[in-house]
Amino acid sequence: MHVDRRLLGWGLFFVLLGVIPLAVRANLLDKEMVSQWPLLWPVLLIGWGLGLLLRGTPLALIGGAVAAITFGIMGGGAIATGFGGVSFASGCGSQAPATAFAPRSGTFGATARADLVFNCGNLTVSTADGSGWSVSGSDRNGAGPNIDTNGGNLSIKTEEERAFLGSQGHAVWNVTMPRSPILAFGLTLNAGEGNVNLAGASVSSTSMTLNAGSVTLNLSGAVQVGDVNATV
Image (cartoon, rainbow, N blue to C red; front, side):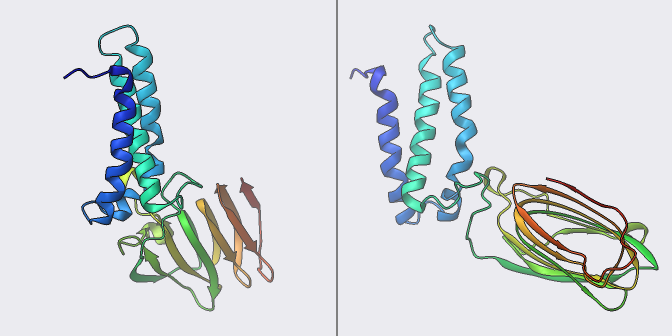
């Protein structure tokens, strides 16, 4: 049998374009995993790079084959699951069912610092009387954020463990900060939406870094407000 190398890429592309939707429908492939197809775009760069490096050699078809396979997987994934994750190409648009994580809580002393690092989803920060803090919500696997309370301060960070090709999935955090301690508050928000309401709190300083998202900060009624710094 003779294989026309010029048509090899097209053959691989169309085979995968049809096989992947059929495999998802037959429950042979996990639909949630396949929905992460936008994350494969770096593999296209690898395929094109290999094509350039191996041009003029017997191995030149490897680059084209890698690109064709990647296009096929992405096209089949789009047919099977739609285009919901394209906006950020990070998996953040996934609407997979979330699992509630165990609530965590603690208390501050007279002064404290709270730093939040939140990736992908919806973050709500509110205040309550007293000196206690708490966090509740949901994420992909119910693991919850990483929480560190060393030195009487508080650090809440998105779990570092990654899912398919780097996707962390959509998370929801509800964080409560106390009004009594004098608090230095810091927030880094990536690819998500935040509503930070520190009304009535004693805030010595506020710093925020926003990447590919949106956040609302309310300091009305807050006391001892010092510097407010934001990087977008």
